[in-house]
Length: 196
Image 1: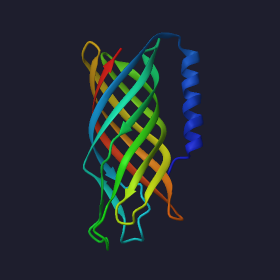
Image 2 (image 1 turned 90 degrees about the vertical axis):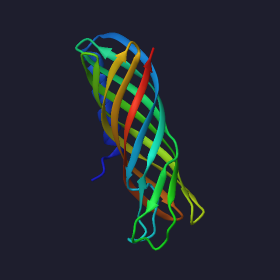
Image 3 (image 1 turned 60 degrees about the vertical axis):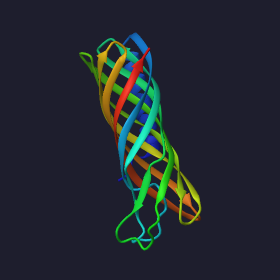
Image 4 (image 1 turned 60 degrees about the horizontal axis):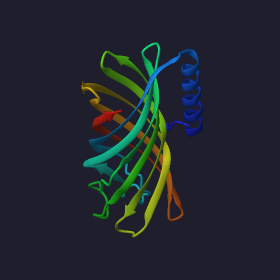
């Protein structure tokens, strides 16, 4: 069952507001970084019938920028925008066509809530995602939009530099030709961030 995008947005905003009111701010910081990961799940493209379903595969590169605001009780809230480059979508073995739909790009906006465990950050997030898929065989590009959820952790290895892991799940919808489509995709990413 896909989460309701409006419910996620309202719930995330309410949670952030309650945390901010209940806890005085002690610090805030900006960070940028990049990631290398593996894509999986359903390709966010329309497909054509049960035999023509396409799935994501292979490596994906990403870059991100965000801000975290630490709270007095060791928790933090924040926001992040991430851009993922192109990655492959392959037809399954039963597909009647050997052509794939490749993802051109993906953009994720995330609202993060987490806690500090020493020098480590552990967090969950929810937000929205959008992107574009190239229809290689049929010649049409497709845009998609939807919600995302996920979790991650990072550890400060030296002052201002952290490494971490993150997993994101996207629930997206779009329109190809005249037929609406939906899908669930994911990515697991090794991240390096530089904090200011």
